[in-house]
Image: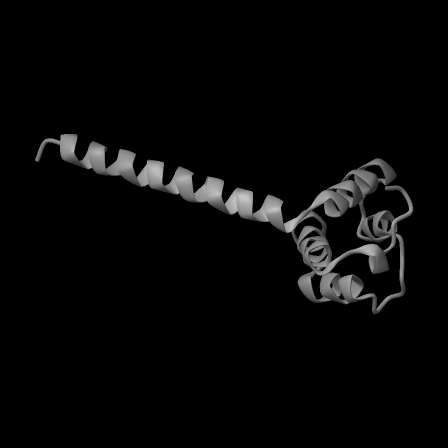
Length: 101
């Protein structure tokens, strides 16, 4: 995994790379998207996280998460979140029916 470059990422991984740069670093969305498109060169993924202010260790962890990200993983998270939301709504409905009015 070490030494992977932006050009090695598929479309889903590039999207996750831009999201992770925007949400987990001080880098803004427009700059993150420009890096994901390769406008600043075909850099190593961990190097971009270092540019964004992460330590070398943290940059390697974030790069590994980008490389392991897949569409199936995203779909599983969405399905899990939907189940959790449905359970919370059911609990809220039960709690409402128990209130004294």
